Length: 73
Image (cartoon, rainbow, N blue to C red):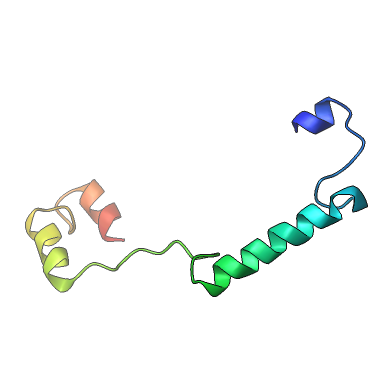
Protein backbone atom coordinates (compact mmCIF):
# COMPACT_ATOMS: atom_id res chain seq x y z
CA UNK A 1 0.00 0.00 0.00
CA UNK A 2 2.67 2.46 1.03
CA UNK A 3 4.75 1.77 -2.05
CA UNK A 4 1.70 2.24 -4.31
CA UNK A 5 0.96 5.60 -2.71
CA UNK A 6 4.55 6.66 -3.27
CA UNK A 7 4.30 5.58 -6.95
CA UNK A 8 7.04 3.02 -6.52
CA UNK A 9 7.57 1.40 -9.90
CA UNK A 10 8.06 -2.18 -8.79
CA UNK A 11 6.02 -4.95 -7.25
CA UNK A 12 7.81 -6.92 -4.56
CA UNK A 13 6.02 -10.16 -5.40
CA UNK A 14 6.36 -10.25 -9.20
CA UNK A 15 9.12 -7.97 -10.51
CA UNK A 16 12.49 -9.45 -11.42
CA UNK A 17 14.31 -6.93 -9.21
CA UNK A 18 13.09 -8.93 -6.20
CA UNK A 19 13.67 -12.41 -7.64
CA UNK A 20 16.46 -13.20 -5.15
CA UNK A 21 14.37 -11.97 -2.24
CA UNK A 22 11.42 -14.13 -3.25
CA UNK A 23 13.67 -17.17 -3.70
CA UNK A 24 15.12 -16.63 -0.22
CA UNK A 25 11.67 -16.28 1.32
CA UNK A 26 10.45 -19.41 -0.47
CA UNK A 27 13.48 -21.37 0.78
CA UNK A 28 12.86 -20.18 4.35
CA UNK A 29 9.18 -21.13 4.06
CA UNK A 30 10.10 -24.63 2.88
CA UNK A 31 12.65 -24.97 5.70
CA UNK A 32 10.10 -23.98 8.34
CA UNK A 33 7.51 -26.31 6.86
CA UNK A 34 10.02 -29.20 6.93
CA UNK A 35 10.59 -28.45 10.63
CA UNK A 36 6.85 -28.61 11.22
CA UNK A 37 6.25 -24.95 11.98
CA UNK A 38 5.05 -23.62 8.65
CA UNK A 39 1.46 -23.19 7.42
CA UNK A 40 -0.17 -24.84 10.39
CA UNK A 41 -3.96 -24.76 10.28
CA UNK A 42 -5.66 -22.92 13.09
CA UNK A 43 -7.64 -25.62 14.84
CA UNK A 44 -9.30 -25.99 18.18
CA UNK A 45 -9.90 -29.02 20.32
CA UNK A 46 -13.44 -30.36 20.51
CA UNK A 47 -15.43 -30.32 23.72
CA UNK A 48 -15.43 -33.44 25.87
CA UNK A 49 -18.69 -35.09 26.90
CA UNK A 50 -18.12 -33.85 30.45
CA UNK A 51 -17.75 -30.24 29.26
CA UNK A 52 -20.93 -30.53 27.19
CA UNK A 53 -22.81 -31.90 30.21
CA UNK A 54 -21.63 -28.91 32.26
CA UNK A 55 -22.92 -26.51 29.60
CA UNK A 56 -26.35 -28.20 29.65
CA UNK A 57 -26.37 -28.19 33.48
CA UNK A 58 -25.54 -24.47 33.60
CA UNK A 59 -28.23 -23.82 30.96
CA UNK A 60 -25.66 -22.49 28.51
CA UNK A 61 -26.97 -25.11 26.10
CA UNK A 62 -30.53 -26.37 25.84
CA UNK A 63 -34.03 -24.95 25.37
CA UNK A 64 -34.30 -22.79 28.51
CA UNK A 65 -33.69 -19.47 26.73
CA UNK A 66 -33.35 -18.15 23.19
CA UNK A 67 -29.59 -17.71 23.66
CA UNK A 68 -29.23 -21.28 24.94
CA UNK A 69 -31.02 -22.56 21.83
CA UNK A 70 -28.68 -20.53 19.58
CA UNK A 71 -25.66 -21.83 21.51
CA UNK A 72 -26.91 -25.39 21.05
CA UNK A 73 -27.04 -25.00 17.29
